[in-house]
Length: 330
Image (cartoon, rainbow, N blue to C red; front, side):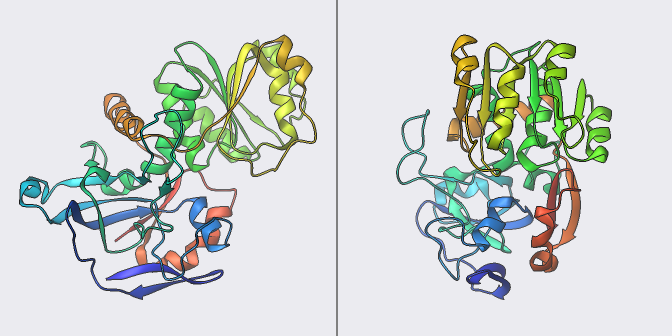
């Protein structure tokens, strides 16, 4: 089977590998589509722990169950499924266990024509999504769902600011918050993305390269109840300024690094919360799929490419002009 492997530091390549042999509790899924995440490129660059050379990358994907090990599970054969990339979250729904990892490193991932996964990792594909859309959903959708609802406590009518619109998690946060009845605002460094967000129903959209005075957001919109961010850095203090009392900043990354300082005075006086989050537990994955089905949401797909173009497509994940996921048809 064709598989995308990390062959050496910084080097990825498509290789022919044997189709996995099943063991008890496992199922074989013939992949129909997979999606690229920044995580995949960071693994290529060696920025994740427990790197295993020769391992198959990929956390997102959808396909059809072709074979099961256990006779009791044969009803799954032929089912269209998406894959939960969580591995060993553990018993505490609030925080992952010390054994936690994500599909695609060190455990072999989705970037292959076939994958062997535990039966409890597969879920019925939402009927309103095709394989390409479904493949874009797992990692970004789960991260956004937990950030908004478990960590952010989002409810109808709140003002929400989602930074970095166009990225994988941010697009799901936008779709989910809008479906939940929030007043959704976005920031981006691209006028094209700003225009896209407004067409999709954003209440407001701001180019942070041009509108650096976040005080104006407070004056015109009355402040935000929740900010969803992945960049971190010194802009955290801008978000603190525009939060309403009891407001929350939920962040799932820190691509801009650490802030030089944090406005603790404003934080304690306004009783604000700065909350970290990563991925989500298995029940949240189930709840996320149900939410997508209930609201008939469709992931934004930036481009669809053949699986044979994966290696040359990796640099595109870092480009700022895309809106939605890069998806590959197998």
